[in-house]
Length: 504
Image (cartoon, rainbow, N blue to C red; front, side, top):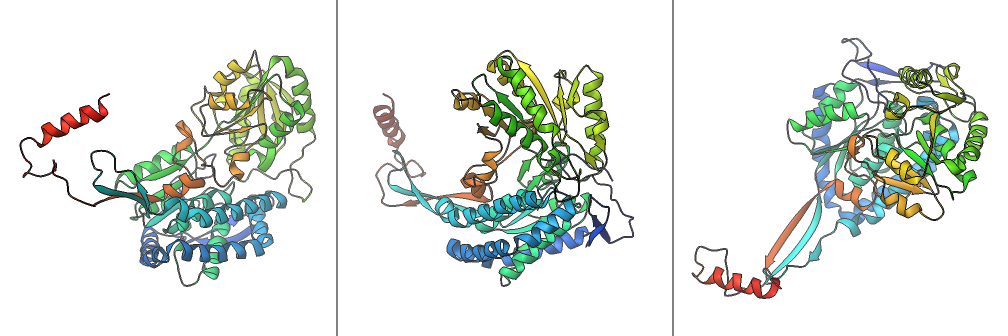
């Protein structure tokens, strides 16, 4: 089995060809959490067909009808937060409070999607313009039909629900393929929806490895929303291209945090450490690089070193963060640390000895060359690279030098908004870290190798719909250019009219 940083798995399976089940494992202990089916292509096709059969009735409920049922699901999720949080802990190893924070975000986003779908997607009048003023014009956003969602393991509820909740609110059915590392979370979400909304089986689950995901891409779904590595995202796109299935792709990041000379250094240091180390650094929008203006670098480095040095990983309740969920990622983290140190970098906190599978202790690196793996590739571990820069102009240039463009952070009292606009990234937090992920009305997504398309917000609702434009003739006018029966002078008169009205 070949695994990648974002939690997706390549085509090879971890089980034999004869097996029809696989196990999810607690990465802290190696204990079996549950067993799940490896769904075949035929079974995936059946799930999509069942979802499609149920989708029409779901769409016919209208926005208010769907809101009522999604609200029922939301209330059930809120009532049973502890149950799902415990399962997230078991399958990812993250601390319980981190799992609960993830679910708080899930519940808030589900509420926003259900409450705002009608306002964003309903039919609305638009201007007909000068030439077509005798027509009424409207646009509305109609559901695609069935959305295939392929989710990651690092935030196994929050990330996929950014597609699932918004797709359902827009009137689609959903077939969800969770990561093979967190299938139990996916099963829990699907089962809870079925419990809350038993009369509308529009949320279906398929489980398995890469073959199952590939089958979902080829199953006839109307769109695929994928979260995972850039490499696997390209393969998903290739599979979908066979049938011109549109895709939404949210891949990795190498997010930077910029510290300006006038920044609140204590707040910036706290944000950098939390952004880099929370969830054991397994966050696509986590902080992996810091560029700090030289004038305040000494003090900032002291602060970040002190804070990171106090953190400890572990599987016990008091640990600051948990294990590396995907075993193969440990080798990636080790390789990045080794490469940085071999090329002249220094470890201010931790070092080679910090990698103790399944845990990795905090690592703070400095003096690392900009072309090293720790700067150019997604590490997805509790490491951070700090570099001094002359000024914020250099910081912006280095931040934008990566092929990724997911999120970024700026700490500056006077120039935060100005610097944010100069960054080539889909999202920026000013004087905070990853705050944009917690705002349901903000679109979430990246550019470059971080992917394209958006979840969350109005853009996220529209992402799961097809816009339909409609004109309706209100009255006839003498000049009708769209007819073989038009007079010879029709176009001449229209040209003259356009020159008079639009040519000034």
